Length: 338
Image 1 (cartoon, rainbow, N blue to C red):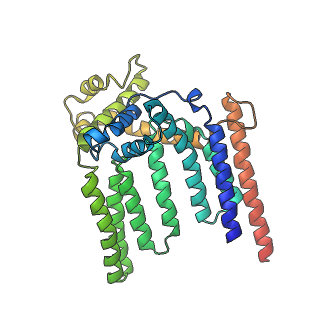
Image 2: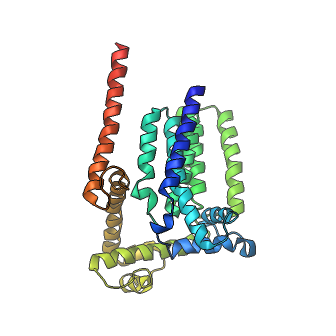
Image 3: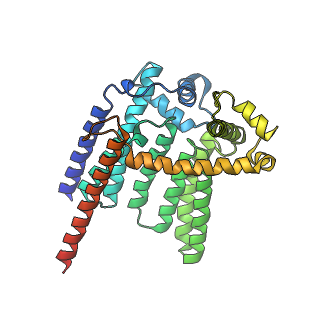
């Protein structure tokens, strides 16, 4: 066990070194992002004077930026420090999660390194989506370490609650996991004392967190949520119609044109259900695109860069190599069992 722990530490240090090499002069690779990301930074730097942002506008992400501001002074340096840490931390957390599941160290290292150089880890904006992934992945580690199924659900519920202070829609996941925990308790007939003790302990943490930060799903979420929908729909609509306009700054006009005076998603659906469904399925297809970006598009390390075909070929090589190692390991395991 000690040898395994030492090996894991060495591999994490190796990942850190690779991450530092990758993010060296990151400002030459990634340009500063306006709109959402600068808003998070602005709210973070305003915390001493204005207090914490409301629960519906990602207060946890602003607090993260505020914490980082203790190490750098300029907002531009703060922006790039956040990117560097996220690019490096996410593969490390992913590696720890795989090792918690007792995945072979080599497979875990290769998978984490592949995530490190993935476009899905380096280029997405705003970075709040990657920060949410970092939070959820951390709770996955605690989930894997827990022995009791009921506690596992409580951990996932807690992860969704914390994540909702970055992306409010995760609050629905929080509610869903609590309902699932109650159903599991009824069906399995768990110990009432254990159930009540566990739910009471976690509830104290949840209530304290919501009392301090607010409810992310009601604290201004309706207004922000519809505004976010308007921005996203306008982008999709401008793409469909090939409009030569800025969809972000013209979203109010586009929403009014197609949904009238609707101020929430339900009214928008009643006004124009066809466009809402088209928007929904367009976003659904984008998920497959982002999965492709994570799995098959990355910075080249073997073949020539700057060409998608090389990136795709190298992705197949890496994925094929990992599959080969796993297959070989399974064959050896089967032979040892005979």
